[in-house]
Length: 600
Image 1 (cartoon, rainbow, N blue to C red):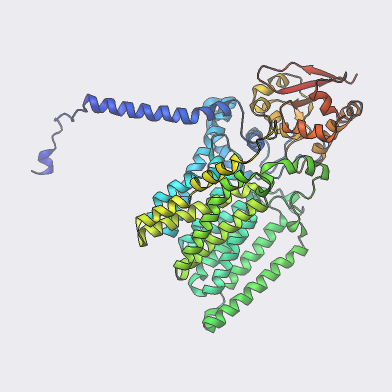
Image 2 (spheres, rainbow, N blue to C red; image 1 turned 60 degrees about the horizontal axis):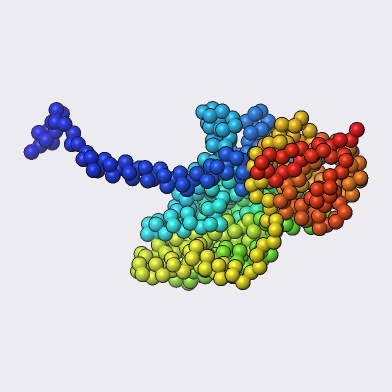
């Protein structure tokens, strides 16, 4: 029978049986219910502006102001304080994902609801991009068999997943996407993808400098691979170096206003990063054109190593011109603020200061993944061995950064570990057997070893004392600040951790915010709370304060009270309100106590 004979336009389509239709409806209903159960609590939090971190609140605020007409190059927060400096160290690059979503949701739903929906959705669609790119990187290194392991290892890592949960609109998720893209470009084995890798590193530096040490490792690996491999990787090296150097220059020009090009900046992309990055990238790209292969294998390696030494010497000598690039980013913070505030910020502290259970929950996966990468590089050959050297280097160095430098590097280490471990499991499935691959997957994963280790350690650890980790929803939500919101706009003096939330949920200005460039305002606020009530009154008058506010269950209350037993914070904590402050009735469920300042 021919196709024409078998196709009868008048013949009715086959009907779906009632049982099958009912099954489909039940399945759809179950999926919708499960989605609601999973995401419902997150929407409840986001809709109340109970965001996970101060930086999430500030990102929403920054994008809100930008869409309301604030200039692209103006990343100042004009409601910080009348004191200098209201310019935070962020980049507009990190504002783009939330801004695109917010433009759409604001048009559809109006600003108040649209902002919350955008904050809810943006991390999730960025998370999808992260999983896709990370999976491609794993497949690029480990082959097609790495696809399913990559899906599991990349999506189930708690240290990474937290950055893509609804409401997490800070820049860390975007930074992980750029890192995964850089790794994908390096393992793909083509000059075009090498260029993508260089651009991704440039964009990552444009977003923030917390991943810079690891990015330098990637750059160094590319340079050393060219020195040792020569002609077979010279095209990839050339495109990587050129795209990196040009990309850094473009990021600098695109995000830094011309008036600040000459400013010495050490906590964001600045003149030194752009100039030295462009110089090093161009010199390395030009070096790949030299015919070193004609000298023979050994002499060629020596020649390329000499060239790299010269390039490194030229770039490092630039530190004398741009000394700010080696100055620690928090160097400008007053010692009092370092001791009372910064040293208590979890993500800025090394993980070695955390409890053993917290260290094990994170560190076991990168350690095991690093060991597995070392085993893999001993097993691999030629160019593939180079990639496993890259895997081991990036895993161990990123893990060391998290443990000994800043805990926020945990996401970087877990990203690299997930991509590389999935690739290894794919190789084992393809070249050894499924049983061996499954054994490795059970041992090397982000859940089982860390969960078991942390639970064992947690059993022997003392429990947290009251308010050691912050005040919870009563300190953060829109409702918590509702009484303060309806007051006449003015300057609010509050602890540092409250600043971003006050700006997001009220029309007031604030003195203190959790950003190191606001050294003057933060120090003024802390000194006021540490001062005796009569001295604090004079300080409030000099500052032009309209309100004083604290969260009664905040860790900062305990910290400042311990520091100054006779200071204003202790008086407010114990309910002894000075005559120059009038309490504002707080709403039910709020732990934010605000006071009007009466200086007449």
